[in-house]
Image (tube, rainbow, N blue to C red; front, top):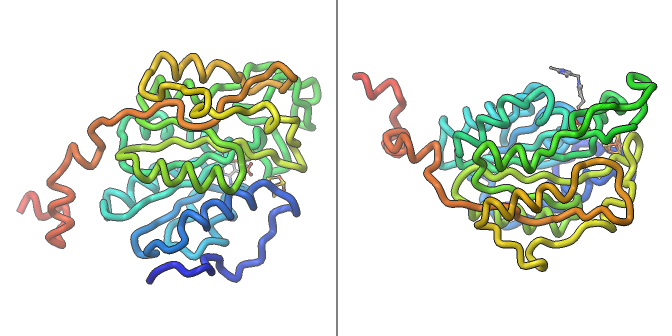
Length: 278
Ligand SMILES: Cc1ncc(C[n+]2csc(CCOP(=O)(O)OP(=O)(O)O)c2C)c(N)n1
Ligand code: SF4
Ligand SMILES: [Mg+2]
């Protein structure tokens, strides 16, 4: 079946009016238009971000909180021909699912992964996550967050990810980065700055962003990528803050699937792993 313009399901969309998740949904829909539905699988975690699962007419799994990446890997190993796209929240990816994130970068399976980073556990009404800024207050942290935020871009670079990108929750940026990620052979990590208008408002992030491509950033240079990653520390935004967007780093290297070419061959023959030992 080829996607027509109605990629959406009839599910009632329950994001808050004006939520930036709508921008992400629209970007993904644009990216999927005209493509074959049978070639895709999507996986989501638990949280506001995960509702995207209900709104896209694509097969997949709305999995457990923090378990998007192992679920993606399971699908990919089960059918290496599928284009697998995972969607997580920042809590999902950087708290509950942190161990999987590091190993996904190491494994370099050919899966694409988008993190909706709103710097809060939004669905559970706004507790701080590992990327929440110092000073953020809520009922669970009445004295304010004291810990420095994690920098996921630096973490992904250090973990060996072969494609590391950040975009703002803008439908055009989502569509474009998905196109680039899909062309990439290997694990593609895409962080999306997605303000939560209820629990973590857009404190002027968009205004402080700039394009790495326009700044002529060399995405093949690991040291340049690290320098660019350090420009934004996820703390409060001021007029001096610079937030680079685009591809920080891209490298061609052997994928998880290529390490076991027998797997792909077996699948092509309609056989499974069990047949190896027969
Ligand atoms: C293992 C586990 N821990 C905690 C929860 C409760 N829980 C459900 S949604 C959620 C917040 C999700 O936050 P995030 O991943 O950032 O997604 P967002 O809602 O911000 O899109 C939490 C903590 C859960 N369902 N499972
Ligand atoms: S709580 Fe925040 S992330 Fe969740 S739907 Fe509302 S605006 Fe969007
Ligand atoms: Mg969140």
